[in-house]
Image 1 (tube, rainbow, N blue to C red):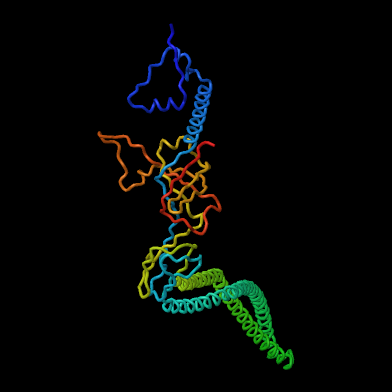
Image 2 (image 1 turned 30 degrees about the horizontal axis):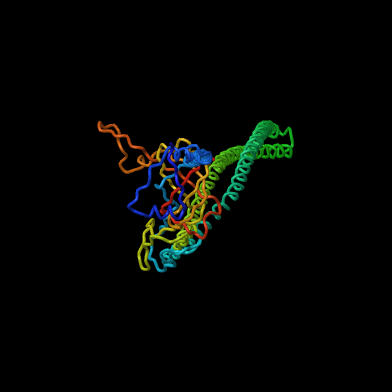
Length: 428
């Protein structure tokens, strides 16, 4: 016979459970069959299946997200550091900027006493004016000498031709004079012979005295003609000698005129030398102008004045560093991130990057610009030497340059040297 169970009201059950001295009765087999099993609850099974699917999906997304980027905390902002130095030596008489002051490009930063350079400029100007005048005078001499040389050559050639023609004419006159002398001598011989015959005839009184006197006169005239013809021949001979002398002189003048081109070349060389000297003085003048301009040291770029070491009253030398100007425009700033070499397998230029800056607490957009040609250790003062026996492999870091996208940096809020944490998205 099965034992009977007695159902108690809820308030009585709660009262019995509250009694500490009464233990609960063991459940019977009927009670066990009456309670439904939780393992076979279909709602619990659906909940577990759905939870497993959600966890798998979340795990996949987390895995894909963690594998879509490479990041490092060994990174900082880099930028250009423009060192400002003096180009001339002198005494600093004015300082126009202070530390951490923002200046525009072209701003006069430091002024050096310009007095010495103004005097040097005036002296260089005077030297240039003098050299320029000498060069201009030498340049004028070139065409004058050229024309004079050409004229002398032409005149000398003409004189030689005239002298040669004069010799020819003088020789012809000499030949004619000699012929006249021969004729006069022949006439004189005839006259003298006639005079001798007339003398015999007049002595015999076979002719009149008048005829004899005519023969005497003719004899004297022929003798005088011989003398005149001889004198003319001598004069003609002298003219030949004189014409030959003129030819020698003309040829000498021709040889002298032939040196004119060489003299012209010499004058041209002097003119070129004078022009070169003027150019040299002009270069000295330009340098003096530049030196005077260099007494005002200007900012080559816009940026923040930093590391100022110059003071008013200081004597500076050419090449001495006075201060630095740090440009803060986005084109002058970038990130140098030292990634491990194992992180570079899928990294390449052009990939997007997110740059978190500790100082501002903001993230900026950027992209990979380039990867360095060697590891950072190679650029150290004492690069590691791995040829030793106690070699231990160490993962190296390679610098990666990341640039900011245009318009990301506002109001010069970033500075070189700030710590950043870049994320390079190697997978979209």
